[in-house]
Amino acid sequence: MLVWVRVPSDDRFLSHQGVPAHPDMKAQELLDKATQMWGLPEGKTYQLVRLHATGQQPVHLDKTLQENGLRDGDPIDLLG
Amino acid sequence: MAKLNVSTRYKALTRDLMWDPKDVNIKEIYPLIEAEGIHIRDPKRWEDPFRMTFNQYVKIQSEKEHLHHAIRGAFEANHGHARIVDSRWFEGVKAFAVAVQPAEYAAHRLMAYIGRNIPIEAIRFATFNQAVDELRHAQIEIKHYAHMSRYYDGLHAYSKTNENLWFNTVPKSFFDDALTSGPFEALIAISFSFEYVFTNILFLPFASSAAAVGDEHFASVGKSVQSDESRHMALGMAALKMLLEEDDRNIPIVQRWLDKWFWRCYRVFAVISTLVDYYPRIRAISWKKAFEMYVEDQVLNGLFKDLFKYGIRPPRHFEDSMKEKEHYSHATMRILDHYKHANYFRGFRLQPDDYDWLSREYPNTFERYYAPFFRKMDDHVMAVASPGLPAVCAVCQIPCEYPNPDRPQESWTQYVEYNGKTHMLCSPGCRDIFLAEPEKYMQWWWPAESYLSGEFGSSLEDMFEYFGFTPEEANEHYSSRDYHRWIRYREELGLDKRFETV
Ligand SMILES: [Fe+2]
Ligand SMILES: [Fe+2]
Image 1 (tube, helix red, strand yellow):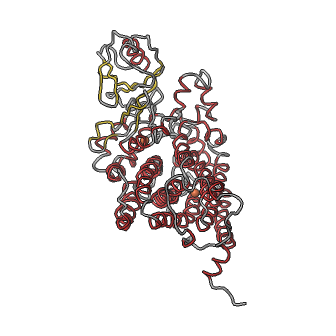
Image 2 (cartoon, chains in turn brown, orange):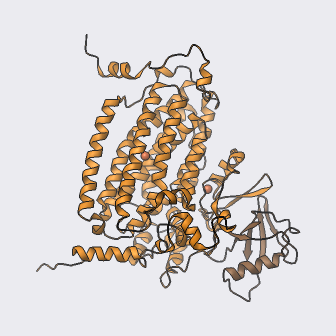
Image 3 (cartoon, protein in one colour):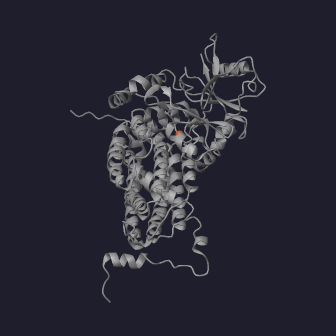
């Protein structure tokens, strides 16, 4: 699966960017993958928020993507 | 026999050429005429406003071609490419090559489709002429690219680039959308919304920018193409009036098409705003002023006032396009700078005179919202490149990163749930187009997903091979080999010398 991650605090990521992912991976793994891959400042706390038609929904980092209800192609904001 | 006057002669050559079929049902020959709910009572009373016969058409077009190719010949013989004020302009010409030339060819097929499916002679003659015009446009543009590719990057394999590069999904999806519409919708989409409302802003500022920077050949391409547009615009107006006057039931259908295609056309012109505001070092006009002149004054405040009597209102979201004029070119240039390492025309580091001009023309927005982004490239030209592949709008296929013009610090991206998926749209305009025909737009294909899954190979080189060019042809202009080549051509010709007069 592919999720689309945006980092509103960084002007390189004003659009959501594709990140290959897996339904069984923990949301924390996805977060680490994106922060490392894109060289976001270390030592900061980040969180993930899923965006959908009717609003936003926090992503629980200790749960898998599937348990968080994330689907292929879902847009996510990485906030920090 | 008495000599026929112009209109009777025109009539004799162009009208009543069709017959009514006796052995088959007319609907079998024209299966799409009723498919869109359009009612036409008396199509014979409609005339092509240009009343052009084929021999006149050939004569006029051949004069245009002779004139254009004379200018082309002089430009090629005298190294016109080395004489322009700044070679970064060619990156804009490359953008035009990928986006506009295949669109010309698609427009040629589209006109043939309309003429085939609408059995009205006036429309047939006009669409036939326009189909040939569009081929001519495609060909004079290709001629230019063929010449330029002897000196500069990016244009050597553009048929492959046209087919495969992510950037070109924008115009391709636009024309595929029109080609899969019914013939009357396609007619309104292209002849009215595209030609009548927008082509002036495409070809006039761009041709003037070409002339301003000294690209005589491209200025001639633009002017020669634009000289056909008055005919295309007249067809658009005639087609619109015909549909509105033939039957009241057509009015809400036409309104729906105007709503959709206004925003569709407006978005497909996004990159044109950068070709007006950014790529030319000497600018002829700003996007904002050109938009006010050609779209706001002439069309939205002018033409649509006249259409009010038919019950037609200005297209949905036209206020959004007016608000966005302060942001459009900057936000679009920012997208191009984000992905310039994977595009076949380059971005460039803004120069002090660029900052001056942009701040002066856009006092409300440029310094405040955009200049800090561009200044990050002062130390390192790739500083603002995005290291990934973006999600694009499910309708216009442009990366979803336009700011909300009412609150520019916020994103304008819209999220829609349909068929078990969250779809992303760049703006309320594209969102409403999606919502009106979700089954159509949910089928869109965006190559980023294929790139990321390794469908075209595992390395970056494989991806460039698929695009039809190499990584050296991408990135930033002033640090590129194209810029250095251009400087050397100028030295060869002695154009770098400054002569003092005492
Ligand atoms: Fe054209
Ligand atoms: Fe869009």
